[in-house]
Length: 528
Image (tube, rainbow, N blue to C red):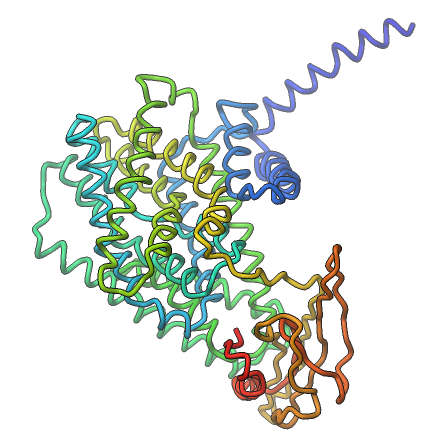
């Protein structure tokens, strides 16, 4: 009887597994996607200690569960992938902007915008020269590859760079460049695809005017939309927390859709809207930030899983695509990108070692892969070869550059003491008094360097009336890094790196930050 049961199980289990795999596509949203995302999260938790980026884990998960792997999710629609990728990028860029401080933006505006414009052109020129004149590749193939892969990727950089212990100025330069260089890369790609698919070329005048419109109009639209939204939030002060999340979703989507409808850069508008809202005071801002962070993380992982599912790795081993992809990555990372950075930042007072790091941190990711779908969508010759080459080069970029950024920063002595995130947080929602017009908000402030240095006591702070310290999170340096939650008292002495949670009127938030900045001015480090 035991033998019969064993035989029964041996026959039943494979049959059920085959039925599951055959029918999973009909329930893709309920079965395949949750299983893939769960696998990504579990793997990322264990691999995070080895500095493996979560987006790289997501990319490999998509490949493993895709058409060339377990066939859980077979997907090959380039046009739909383009739309879904753009949707995910909207939320990634919005949150990236929301976290960017205006003081950092002012410091790095020139190098970041420079690298996002002429830096992209220089990268494309040097890449084309390497591929066509040194390797002898076909002229049209070299042209398309050079423009498609010329821009760095915000989704990859935001998810990797912010885990590195770097100075705010250097981090902001790389992040803002990655968010602002999409218009130039998209324009160059469209011009090249249009010229090769229809034989029509775009005049220099039209090209320049379109770029200026995309680059100048987009930030204006994003800024105005964010200002209106902040005013609307403070005017309405909804009682239901979910309404704030809906407003955030509407802001990001509308900023992108409205700007794209007017043929400007929707991605740049979304990033600008995020920066504007992130540097304004409005009701329930901390809750909006938490929701934005969650949506950004989900979008980032889904984006790279989708791109992993889309690719077919078996094509990498056809017609030497494997070797071509390696050569593309090497020339891009070690020749074109460094040359563009060093030439594009002449006279900008950036240190040599910082230029080296900026060159190495030019990660490629979702945007180049999305742009690589254009040739195939427009039936350009070698369209699928271009997609596979770009994908493979991006994969190498994430594996080699993305996993080594921390080590390179230490080697160049650019690392700064990393400020760990406290394991405690407090989200506090107030039922605002609509009749009196009193708007209350809760926010956190990270006290400045150096860690552990004593500052003023709470009773010595000249805070605005009704401003209340709710919680202090403090780390004690031990082998296990113990965190404590302190109840604020009048004689409690604040220390560097404390994270304090404060309740105050919306209009008093900036005043509270100024008071704490002045109290810690002897440390000469701004509170962020």
